[in-house]
Structures are given as structure tokens and as C-alpha cells.
Image (cartoon, rainbow over all chains, first blue to last red; front, top):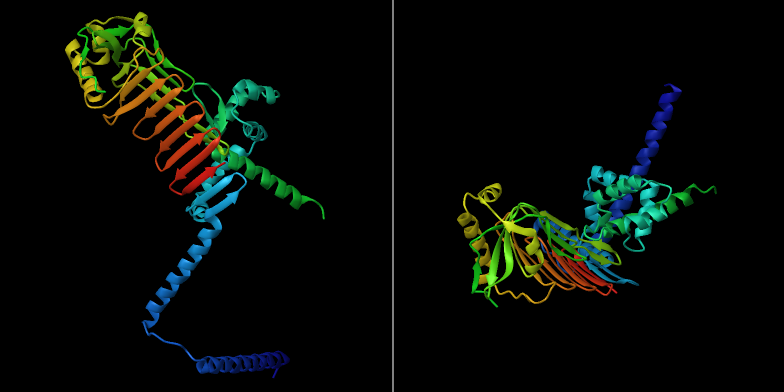
Length: 187
Length: 206
């Protein structure tokens, strides 16, 4: 018998011994469970039992999930939500998400959003703040933001306003930038 | 009240110069050159017109909240007939007599056809619905626009008060108070405080 075969046999014997040990542990556990008194037993068949179990589990998860995400009491007010936001996020088409993100991928557009966080602005006011870009460039950046739904323009007065998604996107972009900056810091 | 005693003129007019029928901080209604206009008489006095031709409606149906702006401006080309009550005096210089070719440009063979169309529109608003227009108030206007679904969109304006109701949205504004109702959502804003009631929850902002 070659040395290689001997080693293989040794390993198999060890594995067999482990399995025997695990089997004896399992049979002890099973004895303990059998001896434990049960209050009642309703035989509904495995499928019904599983089904009821699933429902109970779902209800419990639902209640705890709702409590966690549906009521938010913060300094700005109270929010009661029955939306399933996590599911919505998962369902979002990556192409649509990328398109929304691309509107944020520009320094000037982020600066415009930052300026609008303080309130509605006329284009002349935005131009004063971003004097290093031309009026037509500013206008095209505003178009991109408007098409992405991050900014809305009042058509009568002409003021630009940041929308709810716009505020969320701006805050999110800042948070991501801060997080990445921290991660890239040398330890 | 219902204006049961209104009359329509037999002589169609036309817009000879673009007319701004209403303009304030939140909305603009324009009737463009070449559009037909039929005077509406209440108590034997011209109190409004039925227009048909080309026009434009812009309503800034947006509400500003501390969480961001909600809503979009409403911009509509007015291709279907619409009526205006109030402000009749202010546009009389923009009107001239319409002849057969003016009627044909809008799609009517004869004046009767336009009058009949105008009568139907006026009847739907003035006979079937209660409405009130302060004809003495310089800034009071009531518009009824026939939309694509053959229903009436209503716009009422008086001083800083504005009400716009269409198939898909209702927008009400008065000073710093606004209400916007659109599919699945109602937003109420008053002096910077906002309540949003939506399909996915309620947001109350202090």
C-alpha cells in the first residue's frame, strides 16, 4: 500500500469517528425533546402547519418592521408611513437609478442644488453665485436638474425651486462623499 | 347663484392683438390673435366672452415646503373653446369684428355653428352649476376650459386667491396658504407648516 493511500484511509477513519460522535449527540437531543411534556398537539398535516407558521412569522415581521419604519418623530415633525420603502428601493430599475444619479454627477449642479436648499432663486441670483460659468451653461445644468425631477421652475415668476427628491438627493450625495472621504483617509 | 338670464351676442368677434386675459403671480391666461370671441351678456351688459382658437394657460401649481417643492406647473395650449367671466372691459381694445374667413380659420362654416358651440359651453357652467363672479372687482375672473375629455377645467381668481381644478389636480392658493390635490396625494401648506397625506403615509411638518 502506498503512503498516499494510507493517509487517505486515516482521514476517512477520522471523519467516520466525527460522524459517530455527531450522531450520538443528535440521538441524545432527540431523547431530551421526547421526554419534554407537550401541552397539546393538533395534527393539521405538515403543509398547513408550515403555512400557519409562515403567516405568523410574516405578521410578526410585518408588525416589527412597520414599527421600525412607519413612525418617525423628529425635530421637524411626525411622519407616519405605511409605505414599503425597502421593497421600493429593491424594485428600482438600475438604468433609472443611474439616470437619476447622473444628474448629480457634476460639481455645478450640486452647487445649484446647494444654493436652492436655502429657498427659491431666480436665474440671475444663481448666476451671481456661479459667476465662473456662462449663462447658457447654467441654463443647461438647470435643464438637466429639472428633467431629473430634482428642481422645478415656476413658469410665471421664473423662480427655480428644489423639489423633495432634489433635497433628498443633495443630502445623500453629501453623505456619500463624506463617507468615502473618511474611508479613504490613511489609517 | 345660477346665471339663468345670460344671453350670447349674435355677432362673433376676433382677437386682433394677443390679449392677456389674466396675469398674476401664479397664473397667466392668454388668447392669441385670430381667436374668435363671443360676448356674454348678463343684465344686458357684456360681462365675459367665449373664446375659441389659440391660447395659453399657465398655472404655477407648486407648493413650497421646508422639505422641498411639490407639484409641477400646469401649462396648456388652449385649442378647445373656453369662457371667461369678469374683466370684459379690459380686453375690448383687443377685439374686432370677425368675418367668414376668421370663422373658417377656427373650423366653423358659419357664425351659427360657433354660437351654438358657445351656448352649449355656457349652459354647462351657468345653468347647471352655481357660480359667483364679482363683476365689479377689477381682478375677479372665472374661466371654464373645455378639456380633451369634454369636461370643464375651472380657474377662479380674485386678488391673491386662486382656485384651479382640472381632471387630475386641484390647486388652491391664498397668500401663504396653499392646497394641492393630485392623484394619491393631498398637500396642505400654511405659513411654512405642511401636511402631506399620501397613499404611502402622512407627513406633518412643524
